[in-house]
Image 1 (tube, helix red, strand yellow):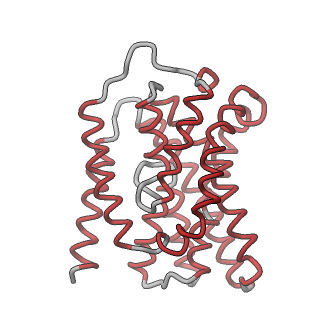
Image 2 (cartoon, one colour; image 1 turned 120 degrees about the horizontal axis):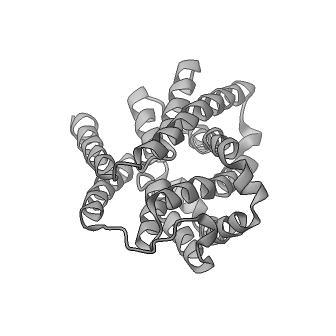
Length: 258
């Protein structure tokens, strides 16, 4: 890895982390395009730079996360199933799923089709939950289970939680913001676990690359969050579903079948 590649990875992570298009999937595909091999460091790098994106949420929502205990309790309730299941399947995911281009492409493609079909039949019911602190603990827990599905690269943590919330009867903006906040403990735990296991093997240069990816992902994610909040005021997610399908088909054609 070099400086330019670290910047590119950071930008890709920041832009895609909170959009329903899979940041992990895009990082794996970006590594494939740049010719960066999926070493243990690269896999850890792809996990760790998500902290930069998560910091943007802390900056934007620190009052709700820290000052509003009602919100914090619901975020923690959703985090519990993700944490438990994540610990159980961590080794399997890192060994067999992360870095697997075929898994990413199938997840992007199938997830894109599902996103399109879901939005074509979905309508918001009267009385949909419009505040995060009004989400029941049962629904919070179920949203955490939906989030766990995103352990499969290409599924998208954002897409899984947002669609799960819509299915459970939350307003679109409510579940989008809840998804932002739920990312904080989720990514802190995932990154912390990975760094504890592997940080001792990183060189000084690799830590520098991590810092570069962290900073660039923070800036890109801050802008991406602002964009998504504005976007959902007048749009659904069909365009993201179409994008996912096109991306999968393009990569199949130019990378897998060339």
